[in-house]
Image (cartoon, rainbow, N blue to C red; front, top):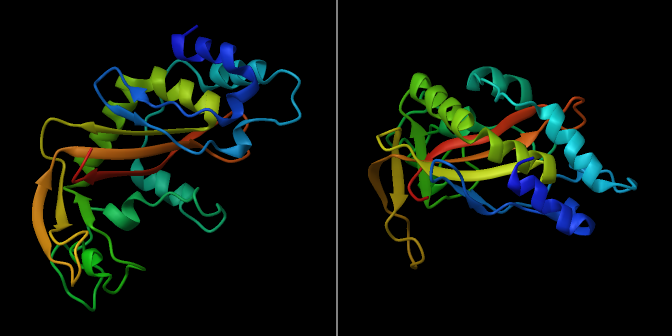
Length: 218
């Protein structure tokens, strides 16, 4: 039994609310998260047994994902807010980079232009689909034990990592935190952030990627 699942024995009474901050095997930072309520049965007499059952049914081998198929399957209105996959919609390589206020662009997200519902201080996209799928699947392979444990305990895995080479490009707001209009600065990045959850109601539990994107920060 892995140490991080075994440790949950000591906190069985709180296990449905556990997040798993820490550092993964490849140096990735595993973030805290609000657990998926569907991951725990509040009426269960043995929450630890539920966790171990979910852990075993997630399997020893990580899934291989195609992000286009992932977002097609889980990006629709059938999943509620907080569960819709949105990597390609917000960070796909086909989104134009430079600003056109009348068109959805990566730079335009800094300003809240057409296609975006609000301004953001960071806006990046993947270089290409090959890079995107490779980096996400590499992360899954190298960190599956940590991902599997997080999904079993809380229903979600949140992390960030440095790929060690360029994966995407975008903009950050140089005036963030200051009064006045935003000012976008273009930059490449090797950082990636991602969120993985369990498909609500899936049996056996099925992991999917909510979002995975190049980021200006870890």
